[in-house]
Length: 141
Image (cartoon, rainbow, N blue to C red; front, side):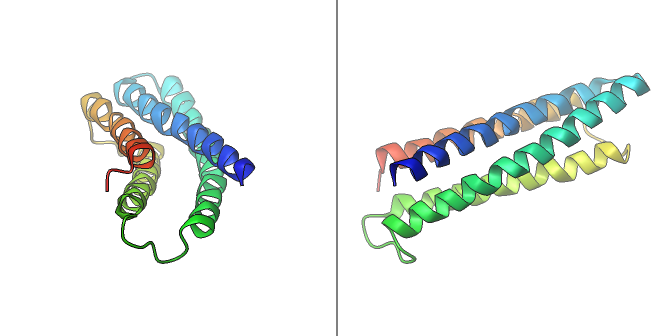
């Protein structure tokens, strides 16, 4: 089980590295004026999004394995931190999906947001990671 937990942590960390970097590419895309630069950045974003998605799959599968091994389908009293963690994992998945939607808008040349929006958007995964990590380590409820 230690190996499952080890690989889960590695895949989650790798997935989050992409979630941290992709919106930074979006900041640059929102500021870019040159067509060649735009195409290069869109290509980078597309490849990173695909890679992030590949990393997310084993992170989620291993997390589900750990969940079923330790808690089963019904987490009982005293495990409310796990319910909260699962809610925030769903928010991470939603953020990942939102990144994909924004990428398709950039690919279609239909971005209507400023670089300032993407700078704030880039802070979301940091907050999500802090909350999930705190819930796992501290288990506050």
